[in-house]
Image (cartoon, rainbow, N blue to C red):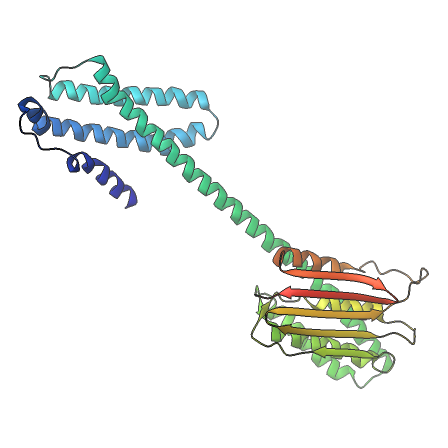
Length: 334
């Protein structure tokens, strides 16, 4: 509809700006002649044909495929054919009008060149928009694929650690095994059904964190103090699912030892759109301690996800000092 409207408006422009003819009888005859109107219509159709032949045939088949020589040869032939058609109809319909070579150039060749130039600019603009859109779509799909891959790495890693906890409880014959399995099932339900969404309510993520910590406390509450403060958010916020758990998981995995001073501290709050998470655990440098091959996977992945999803809206500080391994995250949820 836009194209039709554009061509109709362009065709009507000469009639809108035509001045009344009173004294020049020759010019009046020239403009009001029925054959002249037919000639104008044929010329206009020729220009439209040149426009769309260049846009939909010559440019896609030759120019955009870098067959420049073929393009310019075909374009030259089209320009000659279009100019000749308009000239021939003029001579056929209006033989009484004087004709000259400059008139042929200015009235027939140059308009054809003009419409071809406009069509080329139009096609280049459309091709640029299409290229940018495809690039954006590819970038979006790449981002989605990468995030899905990172999530798939986090979930099995987390599950592996929790199952190890279940094995430990089973070996002890603990009466906490059954409630622990119930909590585990709720965690798995969250991982399977909630994390498929792009974002989840922050309250659900906090509940998930608390359930995970409860499972760990059931195992270590007699041997290691765990200080946890999970404050209620002051508003309804949304967050990328499974984004916070790697920090807490890492603290329990590497902060648990036979050291009587072992301890873990977890604090979380969300006020005025700013989420703050502080996770601290005691650690001991022991070169003889065997290294877990999966060590550090969670933190590496969550840092990558933060950079992908909250590139300029987060601050993450990780340091080791005075026997404490500290993770401090600030995240703008707006």
